[in-house]
Length: 179
Image (cartoon, rainbow, N blue to C red; front, side, top):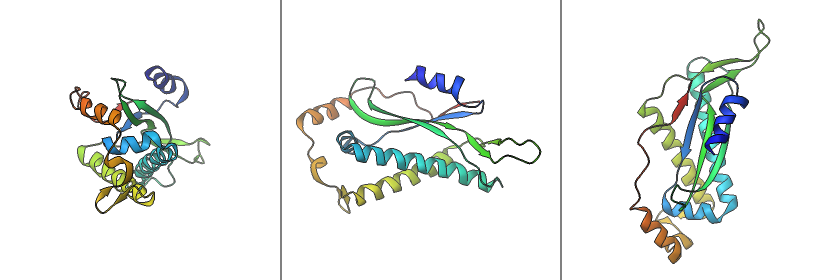
């Protein structure tokens, strides 16, 4: 996947800053997403729609109207230890394009301002709330928590979940940015 991402950034995307965002999910939600193709698609759509809306709203606060960003999202179904771990990698233009101006006739790109921890926390809270609403609408969540088959995953998945707690985590840090 790294080769494809590099190809997109170097040869397909316009020469503007690109940021990679990764959405991972709690274990019990991973199992739902792994075995329900429609839910997986909906989770990816909520993530991307929330992210792109957030980028547009940040641009509007800076006085940039009608801006549009773009993204390519990959669904990865396994972690580095070949464990069941559906998650999403999004390569996102780090800013917005505005409609063509009268003087140039071409769209103009407005890069996003730098992010700090509070920006990422705010976005994460939005994504979290929208994903919880999705799970409620789909009948997987009530006031007590997750419902149905996720309360007792099958033994193979349970063993995978327990062994995953002993694996080292990746390097700390926020989303990567090119530009």
